[in-house]
Length: 263
Length: 171
Image 1 (cartoon, chains in turn green, red):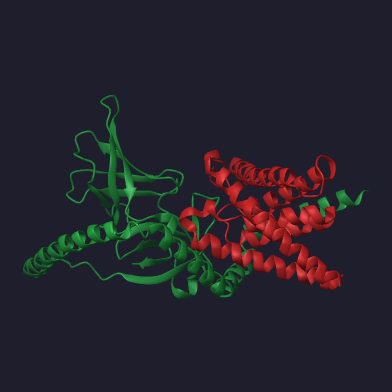
Image 2: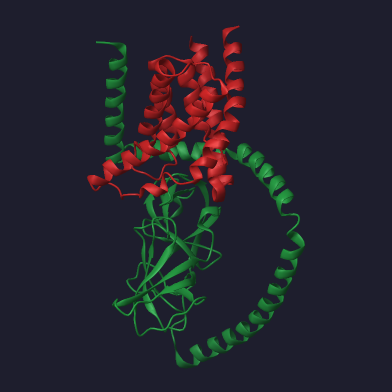
């Protein structure tokens, strides 16, 4: 038998064996250890490439800096006044909750995690995190950024690492509503390229720019996590439900640090 | 002979770490970062025998599986298929000498066939309901032209480094 065939057959058999080990979970330990090792070894490489990225981004963005500064200054002023109003409302809310004996929302337990691996080809975006079972991460835990922006959920947990699926993945379905409660439905991922707010009743009122948050129905995700805002509403009288495209609250592709939300 | 494989292993590890770090740092525009592992496989296919190319591509694929979001085996299959395709093309259709046109052809072929290999494997596994089907557009889109261009820019410097390593080895 020619050597070409011998090599090919052996490689095929090794691949089959590895797939079997992967499916049976034996390989998970090796992959977990490999990821942790790579996370440590790639630190200098990340550092060098970050410097290169920053250097080029400064060159390309220097013209826009002044304009961005104006916009951000204005936003800071607006947000400062909003914070003052919300602090006052929050204080009143606490007093009223105490007076009425309402159960206050428990403090969430957040496990910080760094993104250590991305799959550039898989826009379904299985992202590898550097926290696993030993740090208390469990399958199904929601993953957030900036305290309350939902970005995905943990789908696989290993000893020291875990994998999360981002919210734009087609297999993610989240019960959602608009903050004023005027529209409820489900948010689905669209194969890694966007988000769709679906199953909204024709009588519900939604408009471009409305925020979309988790409704907490189903118990998979806690309520009031921000998903994004409505980009375009697709209404048709011939359909039972309205649909709307959602612009995610964060750029899912540039996640660096996330928080696993423990209940 | 042993030192030859030692050098290659070091080369592979450095390329892998740079690639993993690059994907992480340039995650929002990842198509503008060269596919270093693919280029390493390609350069290997140009310079080594069938068996060596196959096992090098297999090893590269296994490393890539660490951060793959697809069902296990996709990266290995894609790297092996691409490596062997380049091997056969450069032995039977074009020359092993990488003139500019050959380089353009081989890099474009490798970039496209790698994405197609991943797509085919994922679709096959999806038939058995072991993973979710990912649309074709996620693998091949107009962005691939950028990827090919960036790969081509990096191809020659990487070949140069590889040749230097080869010469070091043979001394």
